[in-house]
Length: 340
Ligand SMILES: [Zn+2]
Image (cartoon, rainbow, N blue to C red; front, top):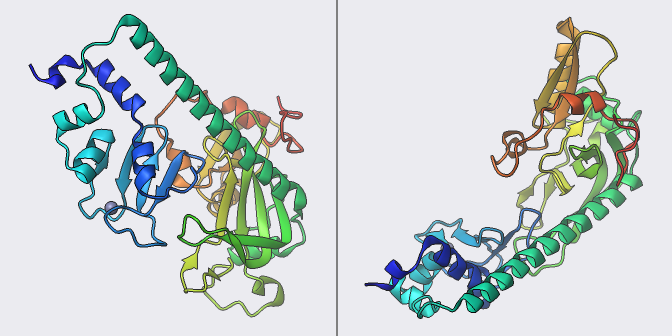
């Protein structure tokens, strides 16, 4: 009988949990701090060029992969041991101690306790990091001022949209854009400053979740914007790499930028969900102008993934109640304010 036959799926899962691939990879390459989704990245063993970080590690599932895709494969701890230590499954099992004789009930219980504790600690670390990001986002939001009458209006006009007045939109005249380059060790530095549209992302409960920022082309204020320009700032690194003019901070998943409130009335409520603020506003304004017999509400999800969802976790309650809550007046950081 081979060792693999002695391991139940449960025991195999326990073995993996006791030997996080994160620690093994972390011992060989420098991994950056986990992002909000629990992903760390770093230089891959296939091409350890400083400044490039194609290797990703999912701290939650303890899986990994390489974006270079140069035959690095990816997967779990066994895939790691196969790829980078040349171990077949049985050798990997021996390496992880999975071939030892069955443990006593006490040992099994103690191991389970350790795993539970590790998982709790991991969840607490993630929750604390998310809260830290949300705090920073809140400080960005509260530092910004009203958007009406600013270059934000000019930006919407440039995009062919009526200027949008929304409690979810603010303006910062001199917003700093930080960039750390590709180097996971580098400290972010300010590479651009300028006018910026700051949008609040609300969580399902209505509380503040984070900010979505769009840096705008300063020529919107001064004139001289060439035909075909996007109206967004052109932000490039010293090495010429173009960077997105939009950034998100805080908790985006499941949240939305709620552009308007549901108007009072009896007509049916229609929720329009789009990706960006501009695309959602375009659809919202077109519907409001041309479609009758309905009250339209526009929510921008920030990105496509946030519209599609991951199909993970508990199902989402029907949105109709959230639509009625609307923007709920002032955005509150930790209470739902005047919602409901
Ligand atoms: Zn690789």
